[in-house]
Length: 214
Length: 318
Image (cartoon, rainbow over all chains, first blue to last red; front, side):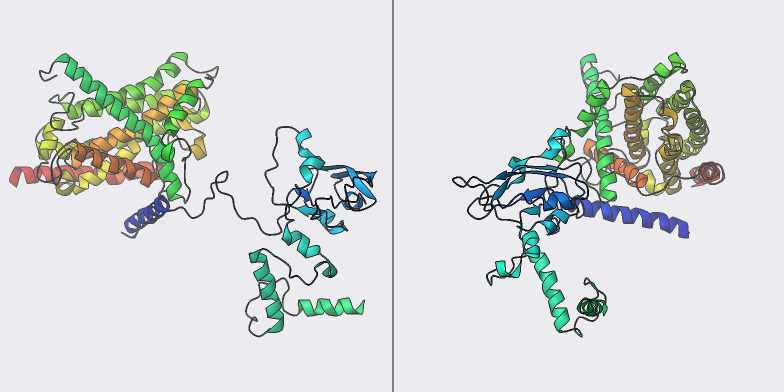
């Protein structure tokens, strides 16, 4: 008798799912038509930034190529022509190549870059039909003049003196998370139960102490 | 032919065949959509509105696929078996009373003829596995042989009690006997036995052991490709549609319904049972083989015999 009841219960469960999904399917993202929101610091294809006046930020210092663990970056520097400058330094990148097939998307190049040239973008549709097309050259890597750099990446590594007193413009979600963390440090009691921050209780303070000692 | 002009008869035959085959084709679409919905997915929805052109795309694809015939097969049997399943299913459509004046053939022994024809598709499955001469196909056909034979008995017993109630072997008379009350209400045990047996008869889950993808690759149709595979596939879904139509005919009063009678009642009931087939498939896991046989011989057949006995006694004394 119990078994017969279970049969009907099973039918009822599948019917509920069927009716629910005919009306509205909440899980599936229909990929080429709909795209999922990426996390603000998602690490995908490299994009090279420009100054506000359109000059390239890159000065061909080769730090990113040096730190790259998979040797995905190749840069050839050139003397910056004074009458028609490409960058704001003495040198500029005559050749800038990034191999999407070699890159492991670790983000070291972004951290190494002293001039905030490299930003990891949310361009993740990198598939092509040949290996040659996976090597991006300067034309593809540099953003067009006037394009806003990706704030989450630039803001994170921006030095305080560059900000000119302006607040960091984080994308909303990230901003909330950071603010919550800041508030939690100020009012520890209120946030005691929430342990979804970057550090467990006491871990952060310990880390600071260790920093101060060395 | 019941005295109709040949042309009208031919037009009816072509029309009914077209409707049934279209329904069978779209049953594949419905299967994929319903399966997706039940599993919290979406299913094919890109080809045309709601993915309605998907079956056409599938058939075109199967047409252009390469046909691979393994070397050791029996060439004659391997060639004709996909046809047999379709012949059985299509021949059965001729007997189904869709509406009062929409029956192609109403022989006085319609029920017997129907049981004979539907047994043909069982042969197709058995022979297909034997003709392929590979282990998985042979396992599939072995299971099919045992299962189809076991489940025809409770099915026939259930129909026998319906025939007792109606007092006729003609399908039209059986429907007419249900003009006031469908046999699903007066014969609930026969209805349930028939419903269970028909799942085994059509090789549908939870009794889809002859093709059991997860154990036997593809079962009896493992060695078939291209359009010959498509015949088996279409045959299975046409069988589902025909089986739903037969449940409607035997137990739910065919074209009779609350409100105006007509072919629409037949269509609604049949489509509900097509959905029921899909619904059950995506709800229950496959039964084990010994459970399947035990259930047929130890539960369904005694129950069917008892049901016939009680029905007959009530008929005599009631």
